[in-house]
Length: 392
Image 1 (cartoon, one colour):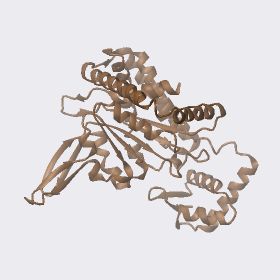
Image 2 (image 1 turned 60 degrees about the vertical axis):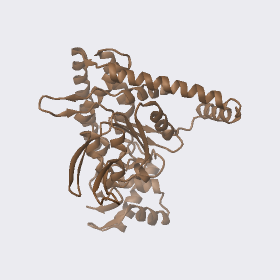
Image 3 (image 1 turned 180 degrees about the horizontal axis):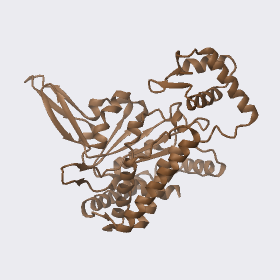
Image 4 (image 1 turned 90 degrees about the horizontal axis):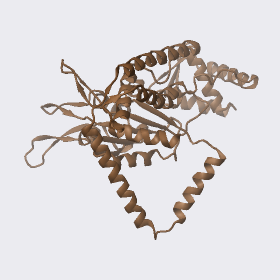
């Protein structure tokens, strides 16, 4: 099922939906944005590299080495004429295709804010050095990121694992939590495959590369053909099913937020409804059909459920049904946090964890205590969740 989901995600992502322009001039994007968030060594970068080779137009970049100007556009001065001119960034160069951003979590927050307009309105507004213009960035964004602590911690909620603001998360149509699960049979198959790859020798490398390039070129031509020739639309039954399922998901998330006393890490909004529309029509385009049927809606919701909905729900009930020993340790951690922090005081989360760890408290227990105190509105996070402020 994982392989089938990966292939459908790959094709749907590269194909996207057709762009729409409303009578009042408003333009609705058809490109799909996806985020892969999870453990290292789970082939996130390889997935991005493969998309770069598969999409007709693609640009690959690393978030750690990219600035806001490098992703959007910059104004530079010619050394000879001394005149200013525009240089398009990665999202302008990938117009009509895909931009792959690796190490998305390593970007500075102000650089991530700069691509908000490019992701939703698909334009880049420039007002620098007397140059005022708007550039097109009609591109899909495929980003890969690691959790805040390097690996996905199941003892934390999704909100504590994802060090990204809600404003940027809501712009991604699909968010996949990728975990390095330790399973004997799966580990054995992966190890067997890796060993065979390394033991196959260099003699067959030339033929293998030729076959791989031929397959990638065929897939690239197929993607380009589907994008240029197929313009599917939702059928009436599909539209009705879409409406009912969206309302159902909103009701479930509202009920869970009421039961746990906190909002989900990833909100389910109208943007996610538009994401499902784009995904379902992309699945129809994949089969070269002119109408998106209820079957396409069902598959779109399945992909949406195994990605964004599961990510929003992950860890939502993790602090419930605690053993008496764990509950007692959490209470001790809460008491130490309150003893260390007076009401109204603030401290770096890292410093607090280190101090309590030297007192013999486990870091994961302290984090869970902070989560529970945050739900009770006793503490709040500031500065991208790096600073803790005690409220009560």
